[in-house]
Image 1 (cartoon, rainbow, N blue to C red):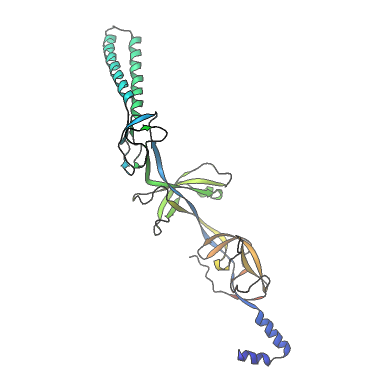
Image 2: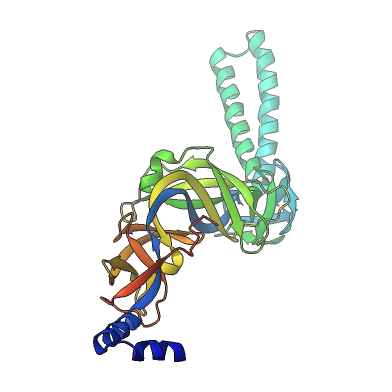
Length: 336
């Protein structure tokens, strides 16, 4: 400083004033706005759901005779889960046995011409109708699991009158699924079989692989999005229905205008984003529309052009229209 003072003192008044003006010029680091291919990996969130959910109940209001499964039990397709009161079933079974005996006797008479074909066919039809009725009653008396799964809910116990709710709820949790809403711009790229990476907050160090198995055929006119169902294998039973999950889908690479994340200035109290952009030897405080943040860069959708220079350091005291001395370099734009 002493040397600088002597140098200034040794200059003429005009030169001293010029030296003071130069010392007032604000120094900043700048980086050039570039265009590059950026992977279009989008995040979607949702809750884990069972792949299939079945409510086990009787078609009519009946009393529960016996419930064979409890919450948490694993069941196989066809396992007997519930027996209902079978008064009607027993009565109809006796009637059917009597009719079948009558049919056997009438068939013997029919073969020797003892009864007409019409009488024989009428009784045969009665037996068939009653057999179907008995089968239907049996289905509502002995309730079996339609899937391999786990019992997730039990609403009634032995002796209860089952009304208004399912007796049991069985869920298939291997695999599980998540429903995601995707912007209509990606509709042509979403196909059945598209791989999806899934992360859960409860397992921060793990990643689960899923695939799109169903694409809903209609768009939501309010959000301009469509739904896709993602199936996730769950052989270790780590994922459970109701967990919060994030799904990541890679839609390939696109050429985007990008800037360093440290160049972005956020307006306090708003969602507005700004950049200090070099215009000649001064800076302009310019509002921009940003896309996604990828690593240490931001996509810029609007507000700045390729080749322009933006301030990445030296923001203290910087303001609109200020004259600056730019220094290039010092920022790595590579993807993290």
